[in-house]
Amino acid sequence: MYHIEQNSKKPLHIQLFEQLKEDILNNYEINEKLPSIRKIATMYNLSKNTVEAAYSQLVVEGYIDSIPKSGYVVIQNSFTDFSEDFTCDIEKTKKQEESLYDFFPARLQNDSFPLKLWKRLFNKTIDESIDFGKYSNRQGEYDLRVQIAKYLNKSRAVKCNAEQIIIGNGFINSISLLALLLNDKHKILAMEEPGYHVVRKVYENHNYKIDRIPVNKTGIDIEGLEKTDAKLVYLTPSHQYPTGVAIPISNRLKILDWANKNNSIIIEDDYDSELSYDNRPIPSLQGLDNNQRVVYVGTFSKALSPALRVSYMVLPNHLLEIYKEKFSYYDSGVSLTTQKTLTSFMEQGYWDKHLRKIRTQNKKKHNLLKSFLENKLKKSMKIVSQGGGLAILIQPTSNLDWDELDLLAKEEKIKLYFAKPRSGDNYQALMMGFGGIKEKDLEKAIDTFSKIWFKCLK
Image (tube, rainbow, N blue to C red; front, top):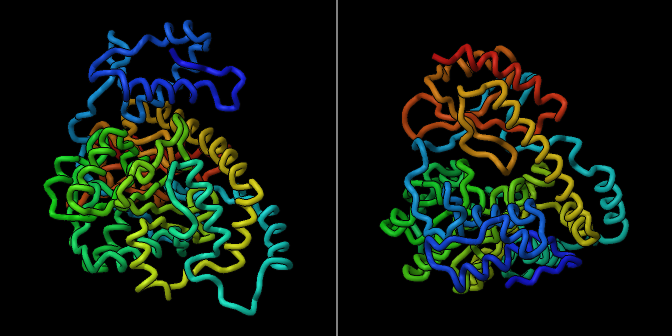
C-alpha cells in the first residue's frame, strides 16, 4: 500500500510517482503488469489525471511502458536505432538584414528577461556589495557558487558543494577548460551521433579524436559505447540534442557501470533541463554517480539569458585537484557585477519564480507551434522531437527540395535552421525554434512558412 498525504505540500502525482518507482525497483519483475490507472485512482481516492501524470513520469524515465491491450508493464529498455542518421550542424542563413520570422532554436523572447528587477538588483549590488579595489575570485564568486550548488541539489539531484563548481564565460568556455584539464590522460572523446556539433569542434580543436556513437530511442547506444576505445564520453542524457530522447534510469546505471569498469569520465551536459513541458525533468546522471565519474555542465542561457554568458561545471574531487594544481590561474571571464547581481537574483528567490514563469510561457508557445505545424503541414511532416527546450524538430514525410526551401525562405525573409547530415549535401530536418517569436505571431509565421514548404515538396 502507498501512503498518499492529501494535505502535503508535495503534489499528489509526485508522491504517487516516487512510491510507485520504489515499488518497481524493489518488488517488480521485467514484463510484470502494474495496476490499471482506474484501480489506483479508486484505491487511493485520486483523480485519473493525477495517476496518469505519475505513470507518464515513470514512462519517460524508462521504468514502465504502455503496451496496447495490456496496460502498463515494467520494461527492460532495449530498442532499435533512432530514425535517420544525421548530425545537427545548424546551418543558418548568412544575410544579416531584418527578418520577418526567425526560427532560431536556442533563443528567448527579449521581454522574457526580468529587466526592471535586474536593474534594481544591479544598482543595489554596485552600491553595497562590490570592492572595486581587488581582483575577483578566479573560480567564480563563492556566494554565487553556493547558490548554484543549492539549486542543483534541489532541482537536479546533483551532489556537490560550492568548492566543486567552476564558473565559466559561457558553455564553450567551460568545455574548453575541461578539454585542457583532461588531455593529459584522454585523447579520444566519444560522442552521441547525432550530437552537438559545437562540442565536437571544440574538442577537435584541442586535438582529440572523435568517436561517434549512434543514438537510439533510449539515448546513446550502450553496446557501441562499450566497444569504443575512448575513456571519455560526452552526453546530453536528460534531453538529447537534437533528437530529444532521454536516457532511462536503467541505461544510466549501465553507463555508470561502463565508466567504473573502464576508469572513464562522463561529461554530462544538462541541455535544456529547465525547460521540460510534459513531465518533470529526469534527475541528473551525476546524482546517481557514487564513484566520481561525472562532470556536470550547465548554463543560464536557455532559461534566463544567453547574453549574460554564465556557465558552470561541477568537477569530481580528483579533477578539482588537477584544476587547482594546473589551471586555477584561469579567470572565469564573467564580470563581477553580473556574478553579484545573479547571486542576489537567486538568493532572494527570483530565479525559482522566473523559472516557473518561463516554463509556463514557453510551454504555451511550444503547444501552439505544435498545433499550427500539425494543422498547416498535416501529414506532409513528422515531428521528431518535442516536449522540451525551445524548438520542435520536424522532417518531411516525402521528398523535399531542401535547397529550394532555403532559397524561398530567404526571399520571404524567414530564417530557417537545418539539421545537417554528416555527409552529403541535402538537409535532413528543420529546427523550428519558437523561443524568440512572440506568441501572437506564431500562427502567421507558420502560415507563411507552410506556403513555401508545400512549394518544395516533390
